[in-house]
Image (cartoon, rainbow, N blue to C red):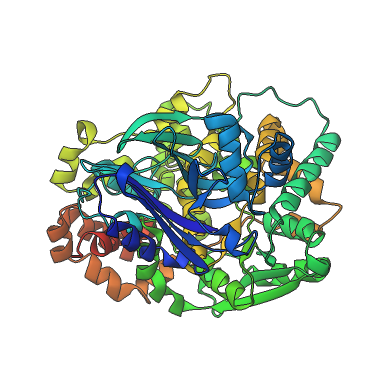
Length: 634
């Protein structure tokens, strides 16, 4: 919906102008700043108008009594129900916005208001009576929130590029964050590339007084501590459809046209099916990507277009297609700047191109199928977890042999690459093996890539394992699949998929909503037994059964394919010159994060086909591009 920023402390009022100009793309419809000089508090806002398009939706917004002001990014899907309750309690409203509902809900219930919200949001609320800022981020991390606690005070923004308009923020690199980006291709919150800048964790809130954080707490956590449902598969399938239908209905609320991504996979097709029922005059605009060449297919990715066309015809929706080819590789450098983080996944470019097409067609809001794999299971690592029981009984010595044997499999085919990854950590036990499925590189190979300075900055020279620490804190009674799904939603979804989806869509002036991340739907999914999610090698088993009456079976049961790009081909062709430039001995030595000989050897092994190092090469490139964009500037 918008972009927000602000501060509490000894900052210049002109900083507000710089901050909100840096995120102009997040809100082309309106802008506003609030400077409270006596309080040393500033708020800024860029608006993408979705609900109540009138000037009454202008932000920063005060409540009618003039006590509290807010800057808010997101949508509250249950705002109408909340408003009706507040009106019954005598609260006054001047607009039809969900923003004003937040103001009045705070006045009525204070910080406990957060438990009432069903939506995606990041907001900062100034309480002029208590003289403090109240800041919060939604439970799933759909909306971004960066902040820094500095000697001058506290500062926050929707995007890091806005935050870094304040020159006093230290540009010192966080070595553990670099390690995380190299290991996972993304970085678990709260860390970022800079030690001074943090991401507010999903489901967390802050109180800031006189430029300092005085309170920080978690108000929401993924609800995997519930008892499992006793519903039969048939009844559970019915309930699943009811929850998803209600979530889509809630998220269709808007005063502008709403469209949808449509890959032709189960998740996006299910969203389109339910959205069609609530679309204006029954007309729903959907958007997909088509390939101009065979590079995608050669890397094991199926083309979405034929499936998307089949679903569009089946549902009677309008399908808009953008064809992409190798030229999109040229967007890679711009992508890193837009993301604020060195995420080595060019899938983000797909989101940008689709969002641009949607905006050209007059669509400001798109529904996404993100989250379906994360709450119902759907990734290959979930299959791998299930398959463990067939070989986990072997002695460790035998598992080591299996690991070494499969490590030497050919990297030229997708099938052998996947088998090699399946057994990459076969000789590791317990929680360590579970979290290893998120790794893109093994620790030994990773350490050879790091410079001596980097290793000296890491705990014990090896660094922390944030996912392992988290999974070890979960109840022992939680099944292995639920532990993995917890990590999926808590970190992979929030810090990877949702980050790039939000940043790239907002770069085109489009808001993306995520119906699978409805509070009630997520709570229902968490209650499902593991066999309702992963049944043998069939991921999302119950979800697929639930959608059989509504979608063609070849759509429901099509093989899993990623929303990706042919990165291996790009690195050898379209990006070859950029690879040689960014991974040159001179550049690696000057930056000081990686080992010159280690990177050179790794690149040679990849080009000779001895290893599949494509995504790690891309990660190193992404980190260097990020440094150029955010550090090597005046």
